[in-house]
Image 1 (cartoon, rainbow, N blue to C red):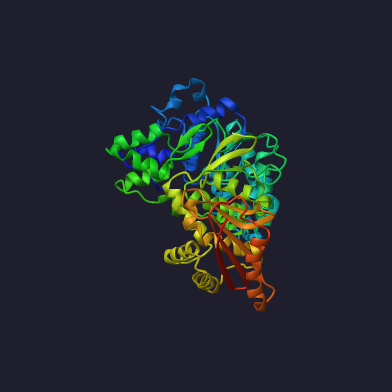
Image 2: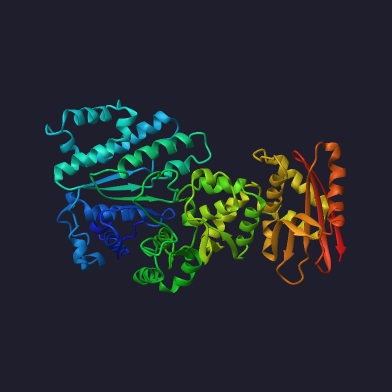
Length: 545
């Protein structure tokens, strides 16, 4: 029985150790058929096979691995035109996963370390007497960590020139997780210089580099050309919406069945589908490969393995700051409903900081927290892919209000029972305990209230600032199921504690005066809330219309 790899071993190690391998070798043919001199950016969520595939490309193209048998029996071995490129080029690998970003100097030193790691396979060349005085001096300064900023930025461009002249052919450059450093420090003060330095470093490698044969870059997010890939005209982007190479990342249904059958667990297929299926890349329906293999390795125990496999800083940052429309939609799809949203496949980090709902949903789709299926004109049907991701997104949403499930349940019961005193008491306690809250405006309170109510939203369609009656209500919960009572919520932010009672009464009066319940039938629950800092007042009325 073959061993399972869940630790990120290289393609060569997997093949040498005869471990279970799902054949993705036709990715090589995809690249060569499209342009054997291209610059490629492939983006997929974390743990979907990007690193395994990049080590596969290294094994295939690298001249230093000539004579290997790692591809015997794989699909690419049936492509004679592709095999002409096998082990023909010097390959330069850069792993940008662990860049230090505390300071500008620290980032430059970290990039210097990455450059030196990429030079290790070519030590004999770099320390050779045949190296020019100038190149030798730069290399020495890199080793001694005394190189200038420009020398660090251009270090890989220099390496391409040196190895290309040595081997008599241009270099293939493989760059893994170009966006990790920016994502990990998203929202912090270091973001500006990180983007600036990385942009210069990547541009020196990928733009106007006459010694570059092909470049293959991986990441999770597709940053727009106007940002980190500025001026790069030959960039070919392949993302979660691309049909080319759509099944080269993640496992297809037939591949999952083959895995389960091999390990004697085909009877567990429906459980695996429920937990780990539901992603749509291009035209391919795929499963989370990391979680599937962890499931097999852990003797078919279904669990949220993907949860702790990486950080989700940008998504969490945006979710905490999104407007009520975005939060409403996330709460809605958590409860099993599909929604429509406008999605864009690329974005600058400046756009991500704007916290528009379309930016949040775009990022969540890119990073694997949403499944997005195109409907035309830039609109997508979005949903939670599977049970594993459902638990993760729900936890991220509830992280805005760090309390136990019991408190959520009591607040939701108070809402449905129209118990104003209980609502006020529970919400007051949450606000007082939540020293991490940023309570700057009505939207801040609205997001907290929505998060508190997410447990009952499966029975409701939530809308915010909706045109209703003679104005716009803050929140309207319209029943999805027969028997549920419509709920209208109006929020106020008071100028002082003395104004709380007046403002909460004013919230209820506003619902009546503007007839927000026009068009509804039967009983309707009206909720008014007024806030001043962490002090809250609540009023509830039930009316028949």
